[in-house]
Length: 101
Ligand SMILES: [Zn+2]
Image (cartoon, rainbow, N blue to C red; front, side, top):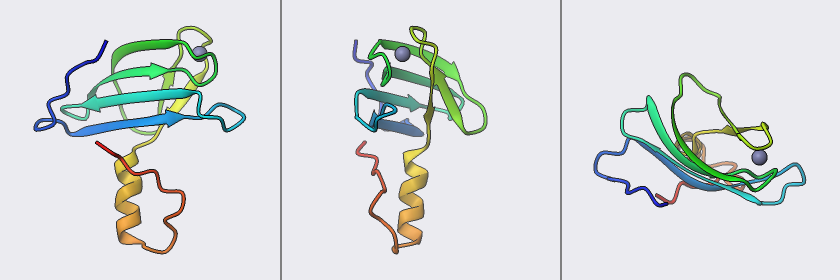
């Protein structure tokens, strides 16, 4: 399923690959929120490759989403924050993962 995202209203969105313990990009997450409280996400677990979708109220960071299949949690950090840091500090930009939304 593909949830329609209204980008005029969206406050937060990310769409990125997730790495497993070996650093291989076997997982993926697409997540967005209209109010920075309730987050919708579609995720492929990088550890067991189980795909699931859900909505969850996430409080303060760091955010962890638990896979219902293997029960391992994945940290979802805010890509926009990384982007803002990059803009402020143009020194080290190599590992910054830009939000393509
Ligand atoms: Zn899993």
